[in-house]
Amino acid sequence: MLLENKVALITGSASGIGRATAELFSRQGARVVVADINETGAAETVENIRKASGEAFFVKTDVGEMASVEAMIKVALDRYNRLDIVHSNAAAYVLGNATETSEEDWDRTLDVCLKATWMIARVALPHMLANGGGTFVITGSVHSIRGYPLHAAYQASKGGLLALTRSLAADYAPSIRVNAILPGAVETGLWSGFSESDRVKVAKMCPLRRNGQPEDVAQAALFLASDMSDYMTGTYLVVDGGLTSTIDMPEWLWSRMSS
Image (cartoon, rainbow, N blue to C red; front, top):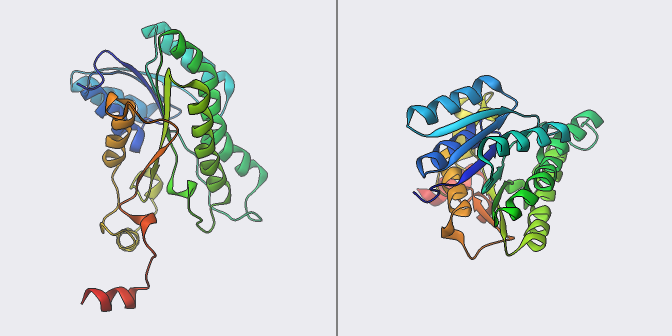
């Protein structure tokens, strides 16, 4: 019960990493605010938590809009009168290089993936400070530290999140610890168009030879949100099966070395 009597707000928790984190936090004793724009998925997350004897409720939120973020925090505080943990996890995703990406797609991606975390911090942190502090966890990506083709907007936003993590940590220590998680190839709803052969190809890029699951990232979020990481702030955990630690070799060379 690492989060007993804590109140945790998790954005993007209608599915994927956010849902897995919400359910894990609940099992560890937290009361969970499920925030997402997807009403159906969020309702399923809340139902899963309640079926497991946990406590959760849903706040419909578009984290790309300040008014919606402000309403989300108000509803959470009205319900529980405190916030101990915030996990800024929601994301938007569009493929394209700099010349292919429209201004609309660029703005929406940065609003949801980067600006949202600043907005949440701006509204939530004063209340957390008033209650004695807490933890703020940010979902970045291996895109924060590596270059990948056709991800101009997404990669810019995730790189910015890492810088924002350090800034928030410096500004709000020692009362609030701020850390990031950088997931690698994690199978979420964004993978809906991937064939099984595509998934296998991606898995072979990782030394652990498997793609990550949302629960793998949720465990890292629990570590950063709890007292287990009490001497950590302004840094990040890479949860990628070793993807960013190696050079991807061509298949013929890998076959030769593993034979």
